[in-house]
Image (tube, rainbow, N blue to C red; front, side, top):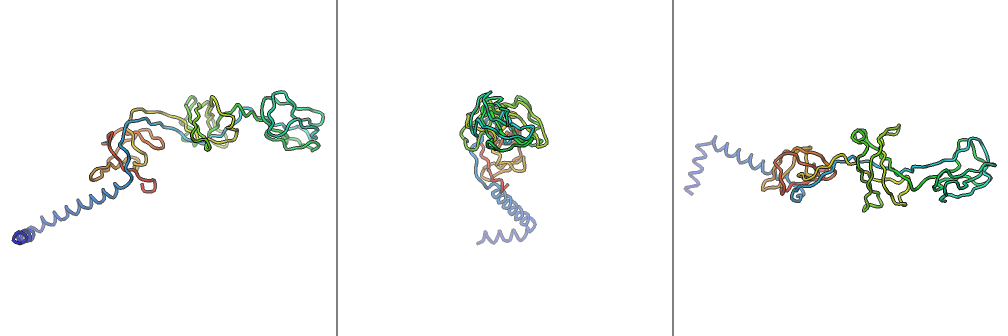
Length: 271
């Protein structure tokens, strides 16, 4: 009791010092609580060195190298059909007869459209047959303007299809161009299986650069583009400078972050 009375007496005689001490304790308590609150989230695994690939992403459409539409120049009548939709024909095979004129296949391909029957009239500038080469194909990728500015001939591309997520195909950019519908890149592939048909779509990642043996941090751990929370007794927020970034990981160029550190990752909604 004597000690308590002495402490009370001392505080009574040193009100300013006591107030400052109380303020300091409150400030430290608030700081710790804020740090703990901001540092909440899922912990990453220990950070490590690795490889990061910077890419431009887009949706690619499978396109046939050869496609032919038979469009008569004058009105006529379908006299005879030598083929039906879905038939594969060789170059030079008969396709159909309009009046007395027989038309033949200009290349090997598959009949994909044959809307008229024998005896029906066909009109000027209306397609009566479509032939598509299902074997020789390439990919046309739609790009945003910013992405198109970074793409150039010779860059490598990785493709995958929705129904074939376990299979990756590799291609190469052979041209970048534009038309009224947007900015486009052509991707040629060494080989595509026959089941990949024209007009199917693929997710495409065109590689811009690759950095190896660099410190990587999860993109989900980055706040405001330059801050990361590092796990410790009291989580600390550090500033980092980032290099190239892919969908999941970012390269750390500088900052107090090291291999083995564990960072706090957060969902996009909580960042």
